[in-house]
Amino acid sequence: MKLVIAATGASGALYFQRLLAKIDPREHEVHVVLSAYAKQVIQEELDAFTLPEGVHLHSDKTMNVPFVSGSARFDAMVVVPCSMGTLGRIAAGTSDSTLLRAADVFLKERRKLVLVPRETPWNLIHARNVVTLTEAGAVILPASPSFYSRPKTLEELADTVVSRILDQLGLPDPGAYRWAETP
Ligand SMILES: Cc1cc2nc3c(=O)[nH]c(=O)nc-3n(C[C@H](O)[C@H](O)[C@H](O)COP(=O)(O)O)c2cc1C
View (cartoon, rainbow, N blue to C red):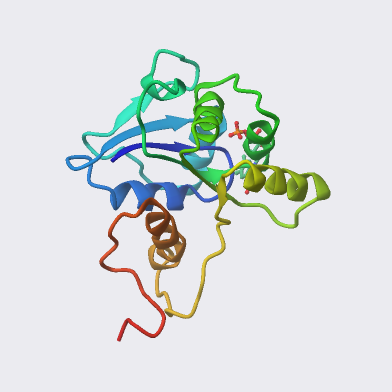
């Protein structure tokens, strides 16, 4: 698969790190874009962060990357975590950064766009933007971890969300807990 994985300045850098760790860049072409605030939140929330070898990192201020054009054939884009600011900007179609233009392209080409927002509580603007994006074809996959698998670590808790993202991408997740299936 050809994938774009983007992170923004919402809390939840661990979801981004765990998702990247579960996608093999030797099997899939993985392109990463970070907003300026994503870099700040990664520093706040993670002790050490390095991109997996083989992943392609791009600036958020370039249009010289293939996935900002519909002519490049990509399979899916994930924004994890997705701030309410970025969610609103995608809903408004602003397209004035690499990340925002890429999301706009995935929507117009009817390609899979998975947004993983984290905010609580929501105001009416957040809720309306979620409706707009759902109507436009995006999958809104809130960073809402589950507890029925009895996660023991933060990583296991984060993986309850990451598994749902991998399911959306159609990628295997052998360790995923599946209700009434996992012993
Ligand atoms: C430590 C930290 C945590 C934040 N957590 C959230 C959050 O959970 N959700 C959110 O929408 N914004 C959050 N923000 C605010 C966003 O970073 C801010 O709105 C920023 O403008 C988002 O820009 P971006 O979408 O381009 O990354 C947080 C900011 C900081 C510094």
